[in-house]
Structure formats: structure tokens, C-alpha cells
Image 1 (tube, rainbow, N blue to C red):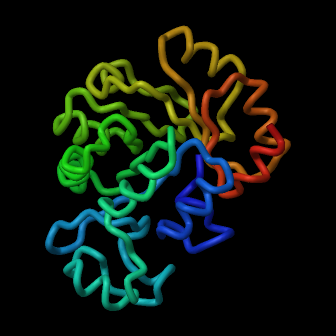
Image 2: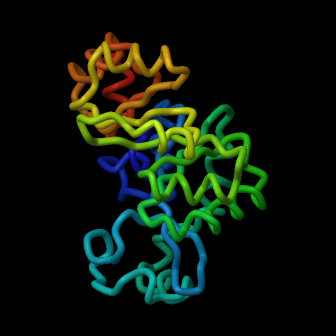
Length: 219
């Protein structure tokens, strides 16, 4: 899975970055979705435009038209991203929701774009609970970066298809237990071929990376 596309080839979370990842052979692209002030779901990981676009204002304080203007059209909408990924057979979009408040609008956009069969969602517990409330049938990947496992109560409420662990926590035993419990297992985010090979030996089902071509070659 291409992490925010292929950020070493093009700026992350842009259409060019998604296209580069898919052209390099990614099976899916992970994209971050936040809302503008007028509640348009767009692709951006950070709460502000500072790191990527040099503008310190928070995205939530800008309308989509304003964000589009200050980035010269660089921040795509979720609708545009779904349309692009839909042009690649079998490609999927993994929608990461750093802000749980974006979940209802993201789910609605996926539904209206006819992309429910090729889009799924990842994030922490609060975001995944928000998606589950908006779409009881959504495919979810519960992201996790703690040594303690997710609580049974959280798993019961989220009902994830995937457990999405930070790669540094992944062991063969952890993957085996997840599989035994009926979960698919994903790992994020590594760019090193040797780490990708270790994750494959551990039995993971998906690897998120910034370097799609290198990891594919290693596997």
C-alpha cells in the first residue's frame, strides 16, 4: 500500500502522488482525509497547510475554495482521489481519518462516488467508531501502536476486518494470534526492503510503504 501515495516521487496526498504509487504497482493507496470549513473532505494529513504548502492556517478555518486557491489547486478532494483510483483495476483506497469528525462526510462521499466496494478506512478507535456509526457495513482497519493489544470491548464495538499495527511491534506470534481470531493483519510504515521481508515472513497481509517499487522488488 502506498503511504499517502508515493511521497518520494510527488508531494504526499496529491493526485500525482497517488498516480505514482499505482503506476509503481501498489495494490492500494492510503490517503488522509480532513474537512474544510465548508465540510468538503480533502486529502491532508496535518491540521494545517504549513508543512506541505507553506501556509500556517488550519484547514478547518478555510473553505475549499480558499484552500484550493492558496495551494494552487494542489489539495485534491476525496471525490477526485476516488475517481483516480477507480481508473486502476483492483486498486483500493484506504482512507485514514486523523480527525473523527471527518468520518460522516468521508463515508457519504464514498457512497455517493460509488466507491464502497473499493474503499476502506483506517485510524484509531474514535475514528473507527465514527465510521462504524456512519456505515455499519464498512470495512475497517483499526490502527494500533501500543504494546498492549486492543481491548476486547473496543474490538467488539469497532468490528474491524484488519488490525493495522506499527511495523516495529509486529512478530510472528502477534500475526498468528490475529489470524486465529479472524483478523487480517497490516503493518505500517516501512521503506526498508529487509524490514518488508521480515514482515512477509511474519505473515502480514499488507505492508504500507513510502517506497512502493523498492518494497515490491524486495518481496
